[in-house]
Image (cartoon, rainbow, N blue to C red; front, side):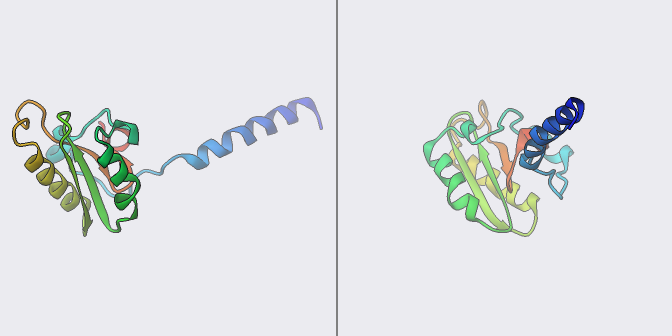
Length: 128
């Protein structure tokens, strides 16, 4: 095999696994006029969940939940999630409502923000 061909084959084989690991874009759209200000634009991974219980929920019950689901969190540490909804919007609305209940004292200065919808981290897919 020629050196040039070997080099191209090596690059191709090195890049293919990365492409296979990328999370596909969601098949649904979120109304950015309604939810745009409620999206946590910096939450990109499970490491951005503040509470250990939220991390454990994301890895456990949330991961196993079916249908549409969402996680909302405040920088105060308040958080909550919802599951089993017919639409992403319904999951978002319930997660935000539940988080706000937990965050009543801090909602004005540190409001609840959407950080995850289904398997998608908000900053990766909904920041525009």
